[in-house]
Image (cartoon, rainbow, N blue to C red):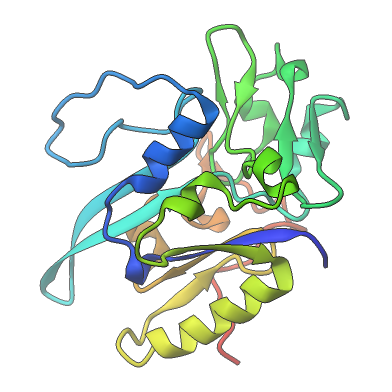
Length: 236
């Protein structure tokens, strides 16, 4: 499998939100009004104007309080359900060189729920167009890193050829398990954004892994059998 991929090591994430800010800056997206909801996370969710969101949760794990950080974004699925569901090859398509799943103005009139995203990523704007992370495809085609990766100060965010990122994820997983026995990779065979987490994915967010994503009270596993696989590791 060719193309590009991200590897996001949440064990190295400090929740600086540099990736979130860099994404807004590169895409010239406006700031959103934020409020104190008892969390440092702002804004509350992804939106038409926020393609990347640093999710922050406080969880008690094994009797200890832990901060769990999760830089949420489009996963750029290898077999994207949204591409099939859009019904228009000019609305949603995969870039043949990078594998980036890209949305155009032709998404106007579509409903994000109709796109059957297992990670609940796409958001509709005030003009009816749907938007999300585009892998900074313009930067990548010009030999640059995505803005979020370029700005990450800790090495939590990585980007390169899919095979290279998959190998790096396996090595980081093996190392992480020395300290975090429950560490695993999220949907590594299905997406171009591979996460390394140390706890159960539902503790980070309900849509951290595809199989956890409910739609109208029913999981998408029946509709997305070719995409969704259970929470898995790649240590072997």
